[in-house]
Amino acid sequence: MQAKSNSTTRKIIQKYRHDGKWAIPHEVKGGIKYAKLVSLADCKAGKLMSDKDPWQYKSFDPKKLSQYVRLSAGVCELCGDNSDSCCIYHAGKMKNLKSTTEWGKKMLHMRRKTLIVCPKCFKKIHREQNK
Image (cartoon, rainbow, N blue to C red; front, side, top):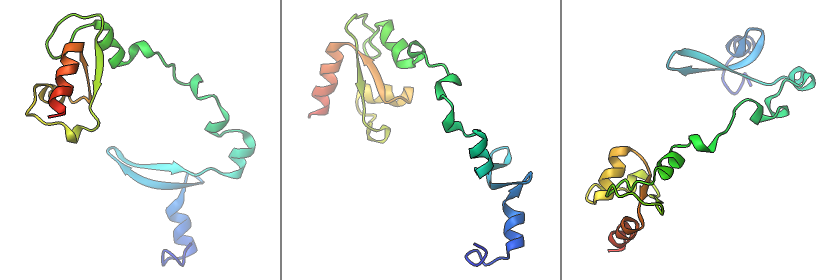
């Protein structure tokens, strides 16, 4: 490793040691953070994150998703009509949206790739897209 980086073993050890363990320094907004490398002792002690259930740390509630909340409101985000049969229009990429259409302007303004629309507006969007 020291030959590849044109350095000495001592310099490599000093560069990648942090609090007595191997770590890779990287810059973040608040300064320098260290990504710790996994050691054999950590593996034997069962300290790896992959050994634990990931759902025990985060609770997932689909009702808190913004799309769910917006869709359950039942209001078309284009025309403002109340409809029980609203659906989600999904644009592929933000960079493909154009501000020449009413729905494109709305999505760019909201900074979202999804728009909750009534069936009438959904058909209107697809007609304009296929022109």
